[in-house]
Image (cartoon, rainbow, N blue to C red; front, side):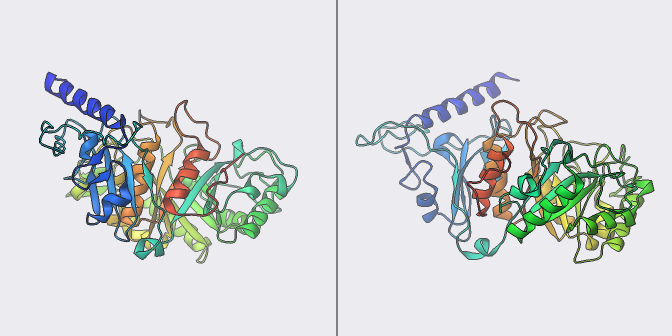
Length: 437
C-alpha cells in the first residue's frame, strides 16, 4: 500500500471521528443536522447521497415515497456517489465538504452552533415504508432453522417453532435428504432431519404457528452441503413429507461438490446444468402450484456473463444458476439468494442485480450470522442496514437469514438482533419480539 493510500484512509477516518464529535453540526448543503435524513431528503430528489461531512463514511437514502434513511458503510469502505454504493476507499476520492463560512478552510467541517451541546453523530436510522409505491410493496423475511439446533419440546405449545414472531414470513426447515426414504406415518426416519422433538410435536407446532400467523409459510429445505445425492432424488417421498407435515412447499438447496462452470461463446455452461434443471422439473411435478417451490441459489450463481462477467470472486460455480433459471425459472416461485460465504470481495448488492437480470420472480437477499463458513466477510449492523436499504430501494422481495440458532461471533449482531433490525427496516410486524428464546 503506497503512502498516498495510507494518507487517504487516515484522513477519512479522522474526518469521521471529527464528525462523530458533535451531533449539532449542520450539513452545509441542506442546513439540516448531520444524520437528520428526514430533513435532508425534504430538499433532495429520490436518490442516495454521500454525507460529505462524514468524509463519505455515511450516506443518505431518499426514497420515492418520501421515506428516508441514514446508513453507514462498513470500514474501510466509503460511499461512492458515482456508483451509488459503498466502495473501496482507494477506488475514488470523496468530495470535500463545502465550507460553512468564510472562516472555514476548504473541506473543513462547519463549526458547531454555540447554542448546541456536544454529543455524538446519530447512528444509522431508517423510516419504515409508510406511503407510496414502497409502502404498497409487501416485504418478506425468511429464516433457516437448523433441525439439529432446535431445542427439544414435549408439546407443540412449548416448541420454538410455534412461538415464532409474525415478521417471519417464511420458515425453512433444514435439511431433508433428496434421496429420502420417507414412507409416511409422520416420522423423521430416513429424512435426514435431526429434530430432538418427536415428529408429531413438530407437525403440531407447525400447525399452531400457522394458526397464530396465517400468512407464515413453512417449507422444508432439501439438500444443502451435507446431503447432495441428487441423482437419487425421491421427489414423491419429498412431496409426501410436505403433505403429511402440513407444509407449504420446498426449498431446493442444490450444493454439488463441483459445478465446473466455464464460459463458451459468451455463455456460461456448467456440468451441473442438466441435473439442476431436472431437479426443478421433478419437484414442481410432484408439488404443483399452489405449493411453493423455492430455490436457494449460490452467491455467485448469476455471475459470469455480460455486465457480471468479471465479478468477484471467480469460482468453479460462477454462473451455475444461469441456465437452470433461464430454462426452468418459470417453475420457481421464490429465489433465496445465499449472498454470503463468498469473502470480502463479494458484493451482495451486485449479486442481487445479477439475479434480477435473469429471474423475474421474487428474490430474497440473504445474510448469515457471523462468522461465515467461507471467507473473511463479517456481518456488522452497518452492512445489514446498507443491504436492507438496497432491498427497499430496488423493491426486491425481502431478506433471508441463515440461521435462527447460529451463534454470533463476539461483537457482531445475533440472529435476534439481525431479525429485529430487518423487521423495522422492512416495516414488518412484531419487531419487538425476539426471533428465538
